[in-house]
Each structure stands twice: as C-alpha cells, then as structure tokens.
Image (cartoon, rainbow, N blue to C red; front, side, top):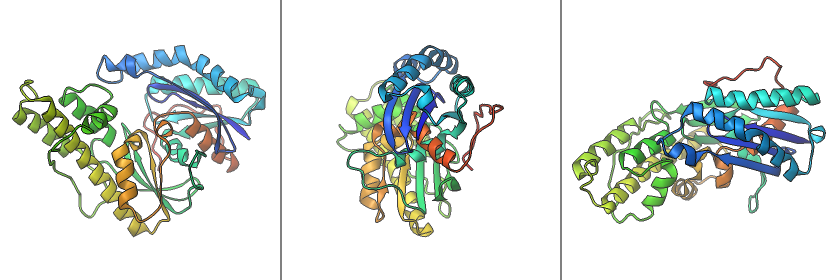
Length: 336
C-alpha cells in the first residue's frame, strides 16, 4: 500500500512515497533556509510563494524516484496544520486536486502527529518498531510537548511549553549571540568548540511536566550585556562558551523531565520527534540517562519531511480515518 505524502507547513517543500507506513520509496525535500537566513527568520509570504514555485517539481521527482505514478497510489496524505496558513494552503490544495482527479482517498495529517510517526519508518541499524505504551518528546521550532501514546491515534498530552518552544529559544538566542539563522544548527556547531560552558539557570516547574525557556533566554540576554557581547567587545570564545551553556541547559531540562515522566507513566519506550531531536547532544544525553529504550529517527527524518506524513497517513487509512473535500488548513491545529 503506497501513500503519497505532501508537506508544506513552514519553509520546506516536500513530497514522498512510503510503502506500508514503514518503507521509504522516495523522500524529496526542498529547503528555503538560505532564502530566509538573510531576514533572520521565516517570512510567511516569501515561504508560501516559494512553495508555489517548488511543489510541482518536487512532486514529480518523488513519483519518479519511487517508480510509481498516481494510479499506483492508495491515498494522498497532506499536512493541514499546524503551520503557516499560506504555506499549508499550497500543499492542501495540491493534495485535494490530485485526490479528486485520481479518485483517491484524501488524508489530512497533523504535522506533530507526522513527526511522531517518523519513528515507524524503517532505517538501517534500527531495531524494531515502537511499542505501546510510550512517551514521545516532540521538540521543534514551535512546539515542545510530552505526549503519552497508548495506541495508534491515542494521545494524551502530559506536558507542554508554557512560553517559548525549545527550537524558538535556539533561534532567539542565536540572534542574541550574533550567530545567525537557523539557531539550532548554528548553536550546536558552535558549542562543539566550548572550553568552559557558562552555567545557566534551569526552570524545573516542580510538580509539573511542563517546560519553560523564557527565563533561560532572559538569562542569556543579561549575560550578553555583562560579557560585552552586545557591543562586540567580547571574545569569540565567550560567545562559544555561552552558546554551549545555553544548549546544556535546554538539553538538561528536556531529558530530565522526559525521563522522570516516562518512569511515572510506566511506559515501555521513549520516542524523540521534531527538528530539535536532530541535536546530537540531546540524542546522546537522552540515551545515556534513560533506563528505557530510546527511539530516535535519523536527522533527516527529524526535520520537516513528507515521508513522516505519508507514514502517518498509512496508519490513519488503516483505521478508516480519511478527510472530506471540505478539509481546510488549520494553522493552530492541536494534537489533543
């Protein structure tokens, strides 16, 4: 059963064909990072226009690489939220047109649910599929959520960020340090050269599984003034050590709260998902501190892609969950 996935929720234009929810036949992604880097962040209007230019060539490449045509598909899955409204509209309207023209089932997929299902995709060296019940930490530019999953499509949100998402905090701190965009990649790279990472505060929010990173961001801002980073009188090593201290604080909170929650809810596994899950320190620290098995997709499947949308679409189709022609984009769509 082959599912075509389409993803245009933010600034990546992606299309993929996945077989039986686990085997990638093609996974094509066109990034807009270089375009938005000059602005220091994503410009929604620019993103949607770039999707219009890229989406048909990307679709054609995905079908060609998979060796299938539209008649060989079982369904079309597309992200309909959350995300940028203009960007989402490009993917949803394309998916509707194709599904209607080819008489195929249409499946709207929550972007966050797609990130979770990246863990079901087969990859070299991966041992088995996720086992329920499990706890998933979703960390991306717009979301930091702890989700208890007891079966396919069965979600209970046990924790979320009360302010900035982890990825958002990475981007904002990178700007404070004058490192550029995207923040996650740049800070991770800079942190590898740290000599004495600065010790920064952690917001534990005791008695809760929620997260908070706004205080940490404020602490970094104050240190940029104290160290002279704001007026460029600091050394590059100070910037690197502060970047490393920030990353350590974020990873410490994410891992500690996830491991403690997994123990309380008596789950079998911990899953990581979302763009920040590509961060190597987060991946390694979670594996080291957890007594439970930890499943993490490869970095390319952590960042936005269409294979995860197609994989999720397969399991939704198996459960008989398809969308009507009145399906619309939902920029603020929630998982639960």
